[in-house]
Image (cartoon, rainbow, N blue to C red; front, side, top):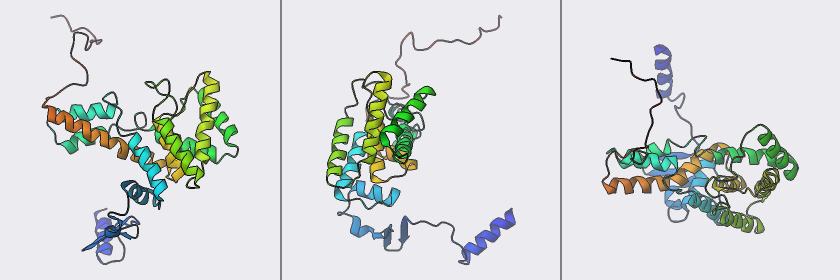
Length: 275
């Protein structure tokens, strides 16, 4: 094994092979090129959302498309300390670690259960869009998931039971982008078809939450589903930084995740051995 590693390094050093291959960036003395664009040409001419599209998915977004992506990123920046990633970052900040470490603690809380619904919804939307009739495919998908006892990711909200306030403005922006031909509207139709089928099945209105609405936009723009958690991290990371910084500035030390009180915890293990 050691010999194989030495051989690979020797070939690399001789120029026979490169260690990494990337189509994202080309960096050298006095040169920063991002997907074929000089960074000095991008600075001041490309929005942050435009750069996200370019680097993450090699998308050349129009100003309207970049505005659509930016709206989705803005909509998910924060959801208060009830969000596990925010709470974790704040608790970490009280332990005296640097801001970047507290932020990393919060980001690392994002997974399949917290922060993963957007990616799961993107997979579902892509499946429905490829299945032919959007309405029929949405109805079958909802029926299959409910029959299996699974949730429908990106729809309904445990706090915003009357509807996620972020849905309407994001939906309106997609409608406007479709009207100008900037997006197809296919994934918007798929998301609305899921809403309709889910509301019929549940006998009450169940609409897109922030995960579903942002997934709809990411699909309309052509991001792969695999990018879902990363895009959510870019969005929620803003709130995580803000909350961790606020907690550090408060001077609170080693604050637990639960409020103090007589009912904070209950031991349910075996009693101690008699002495």
